[in-house]
Image (cartoon, rainbow over all chains, first blue to last red; front, side, top):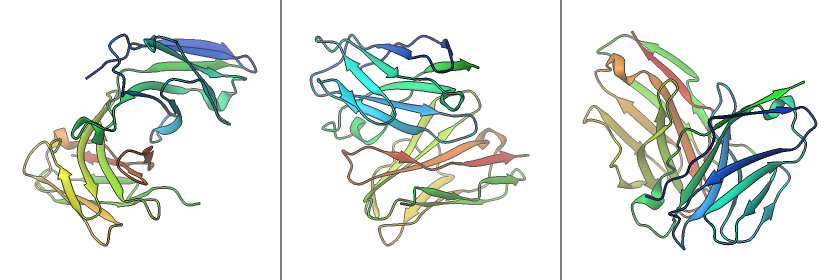
Length: 114
Length: 113
């Protein structure tokens, strides 16, 4: 399985943007890049996903490098409610077995300071 | 619309007892997944349902664990003869189809004494 590498933690000030990097140098052509976050004592929450092009939604933006070996999740204006562990995950839905499950690594713990 | 719901939210049981955990997926979602998360750990895949059948049970840790899904909707995860190492948060997720985004419930926190 293609793996991802993320920093263990990151701090941000409230109302400022947060850029969360993810390296996935062994990504395959059919892997989608997914981001989930997990707030304390809650289940994981879907944030965004993409394949090749940059993506935007109401929660965040996803910037994908041209070679797809890295990506960055961008929270445009961090709030205290954005404090969570953010997971970058690769998933190939065409794979019969691996495509059934999400494999979470260590993620990046984001601390938002008021 | 309603998200994935799970019950109970917390369960404390004694070693050796059986427990049943319930998951109500998002209405219309055909795919359903069970995971567990031990304290400070990542997600561990347990089982995947497509409709009422389970084509992937590869993550069930032992034969004490079983799951079923009825009517293409509600799923129950059963742990027999619980052990202390079964203590974890059990998470359920559903997706419209297997290839679609998975949405998680809040989890059931299981503590085996």
